Amino acid sequence: MIPVVGICGASNSGKTTLVEKLLPELNRRGLKVGVLKHHGHGGPVATPAEWQGKDSDRLIKAGARRVALSHSGGVWLEAPGLAGAGPRAVAARLMAGMDLAIAEGFKTAAIPKIEVVAPGQKPLLPTGGKLLALARRGGAGTEEGLPVLDADDPTALADFLLAAVKPVTPPPEPAKLFLDGQELPMNAFVATILSGMLRGFVASLKGSGEADKIEVRLG
Image (cartoon, rainbow, N blue to C red; front, side, top):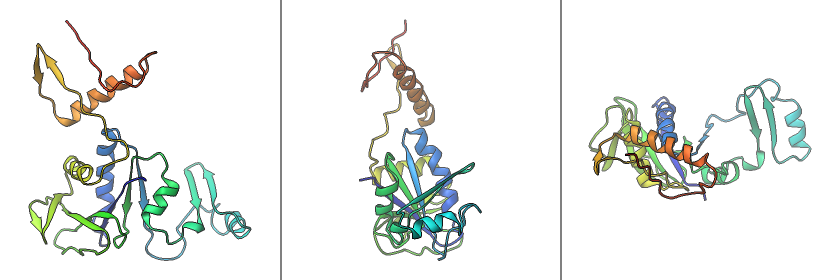
């Protein structure tokens, strides 16, 4: 089962902005992340002109469970059978191969979630699932008995999220560099980049297999 974590909050609270900041950090840690976005306004979702009210509707009415339209900007999927399904069900059906799914919106869904709170606003504290934390710009400390995360600190957000919701495939350990037996301190970003470079290089070599530990010795 693909782990699903929600990023919820009131309209214009900064949900999408937070997810945009979080995704690159999770990718740097070696995770494949899918995003489910809740369309909570009712009615059809805006799609390309080739998609709306034309062949897709005819094919769905004829009995197709799903219809995908490939166009220059990507692929749009219409799946009426999943209408009203919760984020876990949608992720299980459509997010195969992902290590983690982020559900933006879905504030009442029975999933663990972080609520994004706009400056000067009070949290909604949605019920359903487990509210893990609040996220505010410059946030710190606690509020309503919950930890408050800094919405502008994607590294801390990723640390908190991965500690609370375990991905399918744990991200690889960051690299450690030793000079004459002494570890050279590196920040998390540099260590992750070095780890990715070494793992990518070794993976390109014949006979490398899938090693759990890589050692490089110079000198």
